[in-house]
Length: 186
Image (cartoon, rainbow, N blue to C red; front, side):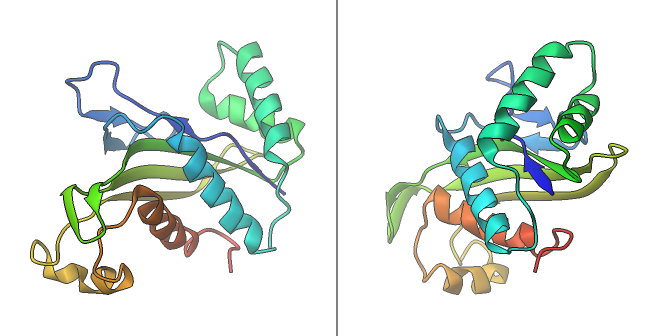
């Protein structure tokens, strides 16, 4: 049984600061204020892909969200890990997934010419409810570039049909890559 906590946007308090620290694992990430509501898009794509595998019993997101918000509000002095463990125990889940969105920038332009390419950065963590251990972490950070800027991206170039893609397409690519290493995902 897995619970997916609502994904959260992590932004710098000061606009001039371009990096932030992950609240769970402490990794450093480059940030840019994402499009409003984009964390829900990333969460939705992740939840759908995880649910399609049929290997997990996913707790409905509405239930997870309500309990997480209540536990977090009641636990002002607890650490994030303690809040996640408490939420997971109350939901009777084996693991709890939490995601952080650092950047979600839509392309400016068209499929064959852009002024600014799409750019997406996020991390997803799986925490074991019983002891709060960080079981798995996946990170994705990509800004689409031209083939001439990096010839090593030729496979990605063909996968994208030689076009400039949207942030949603980049997100789907990232989640697909991350789920290849997600424990128990097939």
